[in-house]
Image 1 (cartoon, rainbow, N blue to C red):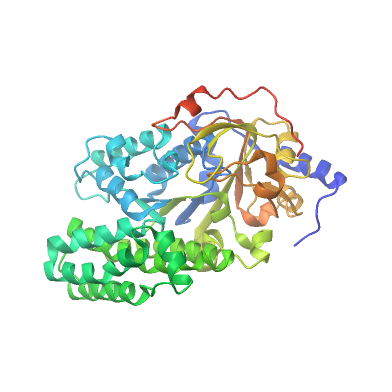
Image 2: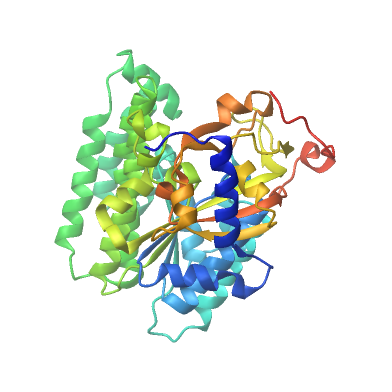
Length: 453
């Protein structure tokens, strides 16, 4: 890690950014430089500095479309639960019972619903379905997949539904094994994790492992027998069983150590990405995947203070496993509005984002004087060198607490080692949920907001 930035360093860094930045004007050609940077990479990881910014979602959608059309990408993998995203996958590939993108996104009922039930994702889902419909009959359809592990009980239900259709006796065994979770947690994964970690009830680890092994044995027995949608559905069920096994450990770890639970979650997401690629390869499809997650998951953790505290993340693991085949793209904003909650499971609000703090990358990018820009960092150069000095970086998740922003939303990082490029929007606006609450609709952010704590 290099030293932290000083005043003179900032002036030189601002000039280096100004010279290297590619201005964005809102046209399709905005992303020509990014596609050149992607080259032949098979993994393009598109981050976001918040979970509720319209410009981030819109840009990721436009980049994703070009990666699909021009680079042959065949999957979109997102920071969402596997069963909910797979319902969207069925829809965009012309299967399932949903008639509209809104219906296909109907599985996203758990907080924070707005992350995937919003206007920008509806537009992307509609585009994916139309793109797939336009392809020749023998062409590979683009899929939509979730990498996260919060859906423990929904995944249990999905495994049982699948087995009810193909193996009723196997479904009976699954119900017996998974019944352990209902007895221990009453249908709530956090209650299960608390009780199991403290020894109030036995863990269900063995039952989850046995069920996963049984599904894997079934997959081995049917190798080569089922292709197409049937093979996909078994893969879907097996991944749900793997999710249950990993979620069981994750929810127990939540009541032990934060680093442990973070690492379990991000390892699960990276492993799911690799499992998805293995599934494609087994079908003779070269995997090329665009990933949508928060910067905190997709920027290389080794270039952040969290990494030095023992955390790893998806971006680090993908770089370690796939090397030059990966490109990590971060996003940034200086100010504007954001869709976020004030506490966990609270209604979505439209909140004012404070201007970036002194000593932050957000403030430095604002000082470059270019409203919106793409900044390549891969391969060195003056900008990359200047941005290897440690500075503050902001991360707004599903909760935004501006009153404690320095401590709850900023961390130190060397952004040029964290990402291969950064996309900066100086002023951004809140993502619009499909079901905006009265509080979101009536919110009128003030024209100014205090920048100090």
